[in-house]
Length: 108
Image (cartoon, rainbow, N blue to C red; front, top):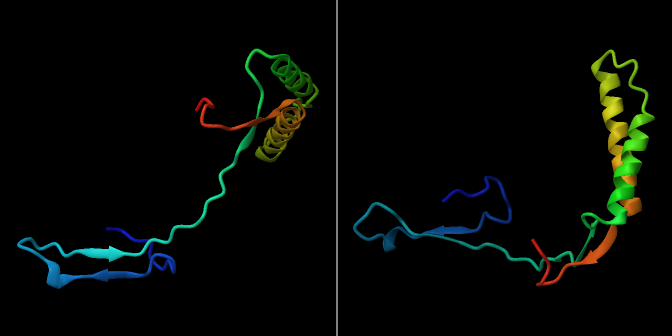
């Protein structure tokens, strides 16, 4: 068994050599903490083939066309353009995505 080295949470284990049977394996017992997990019950989405999807795509294309890509001479300038494109997509997503509740009947 592999444990996370130096982990305070997984550092509580016991080895029982006296419980070894005919093989050379020794039982290992470990206490694994279980925490209450908060599960997200909603997510943002844009339904496929919806008006929101059409607007989302049009906004990205329109703003992408307005980016100045005439002078990408080095990695730094390219990185700046890529970051601007990321901002464009994030803004369009935030503007057009709608909150949807996740239930046991939701698609994966």
